[in-house]
Length: 305
Image (cartoon, rainbow, N blue to C red):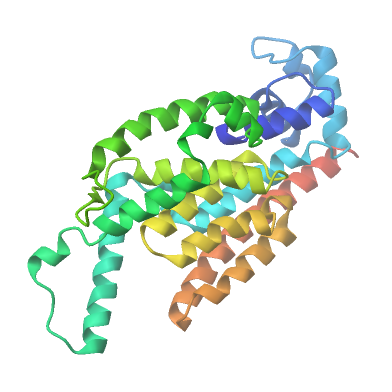
């Protein structure tokens, strides 16, 4: 169970009458899904819950009421595997965006048959677009809404509110230091790249998405926001659409929804080679998720006799 899904999972467990934290319940479910006994859960050196709680979790697991823990985990794994950019560092992001921009510029120059740009034109071609992208993201969640009350009103899970607010404040300072020029009447106002710029934008998208897709678990909201931010900053519509489509197709609901989600993204791959490469990544991700699901189901059937 990933850290980002804690608020969603905690609410679901509360409805089921479990007061234990999601990490503990997930570890118990993992223990049971491997065919191990309940006894080790509440007796011995490595006990993690009481006997009553162990029996309750076991009953809920056999009834299929804790399957959302597995579905959520599998959805995250398959999406992250299909989009490696979700795990890239600031340095990797800069290198990727620079390479993509250089390729686009060379293609444009070749198609127009004009002389190539001067060396200085390559230095920071995104400096104006970057400022515009950040300002557009900030319009979604204005600075006055970044408070405990504002985030809770947007539907951000209680367990995530403080973390998001602290992260926003830290990145807001970097954002203000990265802007060059302040006079709105001047054309020479732009923004330098800074560590965490994609995360700063993703924070705004995550609050906006949570408000617009209240049924979505926050873990999926965060992944969608990260992809969207990388797409906007890199001017890559595939990533931008892939982000929000996670929420539109409710990809966390199971294999059928994930398959539809990935199928819908075919429309953003213009060449056969790019589409085949993307589909290969998706096939690996979906096969991994399906195998994990089948294994868990077989183990559950074995437990039920």
